[in-house]
Length: 285
Picture 1 (tube, rainbow, N blue to C red):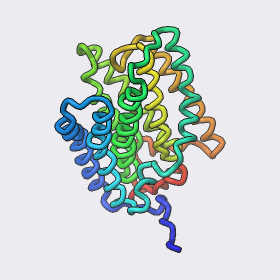
Picture 2: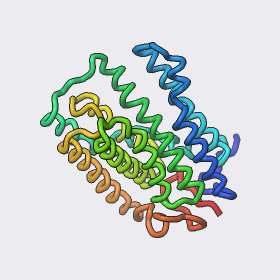
Picture 3: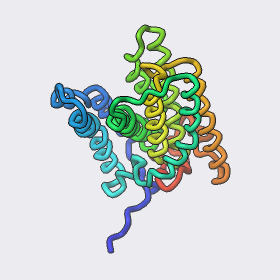
Picture 4: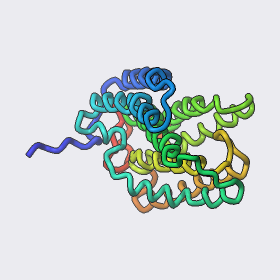
């Protein structure tokens, strides 16, 4: 019987600044060009063929490149754990379903229930595929590798991810003011997703589940044609954030306290490893 791989807590990274440069360079390339091949290949395709091309050609590189770098940093057998994809998604889905239940209930009071003509296809296209793809790229890869392997503090790593995540949604605005509001809203969401990712033991399925469900409810109700929406919708989403934070803090206290505390908010360096479940890693020496 072959020996099981050592836990990620045994991983230490030499010269973390090189890791940071490699991650940032790879992220910028993926964030800039990852949809080009899809656009060239899919052309005028519609329906399921276009969705398949989007998943494989558009978002495929966003999984393969991070997995490759994870294999280099943590070893091939721990690559999925380094991204937070080594656990069942069911507990994360249950958590997200409970915390986001207020959205469909609230949306019914402020918007018309108007599912797309092909609801399953639309849900895959607008919620599932981008929800997984964006969380792998922005949370597990950009934020996660800077925080876990390059020794950055939570806020520097999360703000870097938030800035790029907000910028990716900037074009949804119909004017400068609306675009700025969308940037701020989605950047705040990125900070929230990053915090959930760490506090739930680097389980990427937690932010994925929240991301997918919130996109899905937005798709099923005619709330708005971009990520901003009316004030009531923003307050409902804020309610989801507050509820998720309350649940996370309550669970963390039963397990010994929150993972992010002290100087880990700003810098990790050679500090002790952050307690965050079986996927936790030591900061670099």
